[in-house]
Amino acid sequence: MKLTVITTAILIFMIASCENKPKKNKSTETQSPVVSAYQKLSPNFNADSAFIFIEKQVSFGPRVCNSEAHTKCGNYLAAEFRKYADEVIEQKATVTNWDKRKLQIKNIIASFNPKAKKRVLICSHWDSRPYADNDPNPANHNKAIDAADDGASGVAVMLEMARMMQAQRPDIGVDFICLDAEDLGKSDQGGDTYCLGSQYWSKNKHKPGYKADYGVLLDMVGAFNARFIWEGYSLKYAEPVLRKVWDQATQLGYTNYFYYYQGGYITDDHKYINELAGIPTIDIIHYTEGTDSRFPAHWHTINDKLSVIDRNTLKAVGQTLLEVVYREKP
Picture 1 (cartoon, rainbow, N blue to C red):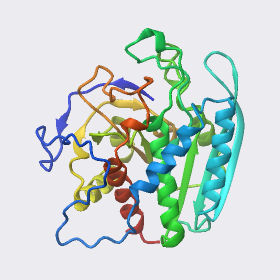
Picture 2: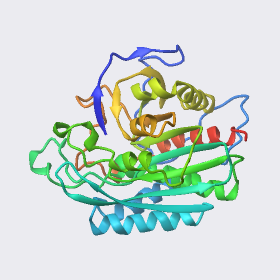
Picture 3: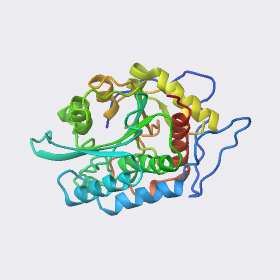
């Protein structure tokens, strides 16, 4: 993903304040929020299981397009989703990278209640970046990254949600999409060099005439002290969805993660799903004011490893999305 515009963070609601920042928590145990007078409808998201899904993806090595690790991980993800979902489609294609190389990509779509008219789309990219060009050590700039957070965390949340849905089925249709070739772009080559898988899917949907009421993109949703704010394209195209998700997080007690602030515009998969596919889609993405990039310090570095993952963050994101889905009616 690429941060294209940074705006001054503004307070949208008085629910959160600048002082209400996530507290540093090195514990790997999931903490349950204190919620009063609120009846949760969704099954309990298991952060330990989600962590294992991250661990498994990372074990393949960097999932760079055209690599053996990419092929093996793609096969694993499709097989894992088949354990839970009603239908899994592997959308294979050849796309051209910014350096003119041909890339063999695969978008993986797992669906629940495929015939339901009301649908929610949840997606994340599953590939990993082939160069750690944001690493403070220039010697690492051409090294591929493990991408435990930047890719694997979002996919792990989706897998755990799917596992929960197999046991307790939602009333609506849900489509999980693992999007490929998101993280191969180069800023000096233009924003459209990112998100090749979502650009392809948005122009060639896995089913003719496919529609969803709205979508949620997950990107870097597993690290310690994660902070999610209202991203620019999300606000522009899907403000009601932002309100729905953030309000649900507030009800569940996750205000230390979900902040009602407006940030910058980020070129990410949701941009193309909004503009090319016409599905109002938001981006839940880790944002910080503590780095020049506005992304966490491990972003696009060799430090994006399992050690940055916090089960509490996975729980906050996964439980919030489960609750959103289980409160939807046909």
